[in-house]
Image (tube, rainbow, N blue to C red; front, side, top):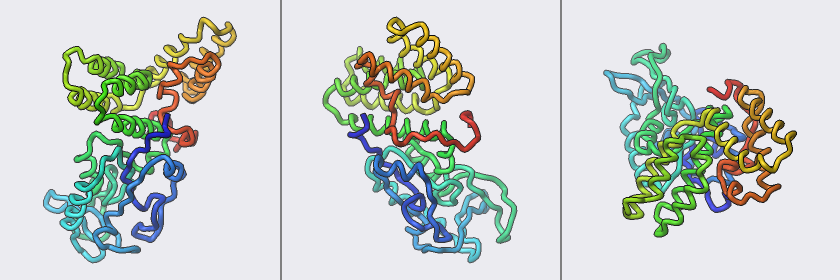
Length: 323
């Protein structure tokens, strides 16, 4: 299901690619390491690209006259203009991409929780938090792409949502220039349960677009479908959404299962509902029945494998699945 698709992702070069942080170090991430065989990464370090070198004097965002400036605090050098120029050129030259994976809290790459300082002292209190120069511009110019920071990927639910969105967008990108409506029909059919978990209202809208009762040109349909797909994937599924899908799939097998098997599945589902079992326990049980009963339709559903299995990790930051 995933062998023919590799998402294209812009990544901060200091994340598992090069020792290019201000202090000459590289950030290690088991998640990113596992992603490398399955993703085409485009590494970039904006600070190195504008000539700051490695190691280098740290930079920070300073708010001056209601405008954020990028300042090398030890020297007082303002590198805002040269950074903006690099970002404009780099983003304009990108090929078709599916997402960004950026260094959190970086004054260049970070897109949230970046410290913003008042002018003046080299050591000063933080006034607020915001986005780094590169991270902010990337988010503004590519609002429909999967975007995340490496620190947040330590949370299981955020990691799962990012990977699901990333690989789904990559699969859709493959058919955006198709000349055959059947490619869109097949994509929608394969993602039906995934979309059902994410957003049932959007699922209906997407289904209506595929039906194309108004006989719109195919490229217009695909364009409109892409916009609605992005809306559907904007927020991670709720427990209720997952449970709804699990029960739909269970319905395919219920008449052929023993009373004990049915009771065991419903007990497992209740354990998931009460946060005592991971979702994978339920989906693995269902998939065993997909194999056992040779259910070809459910086997094609990306819901059961939205991204490569070896990217699945059970580790979590400890902040809980609602983080």
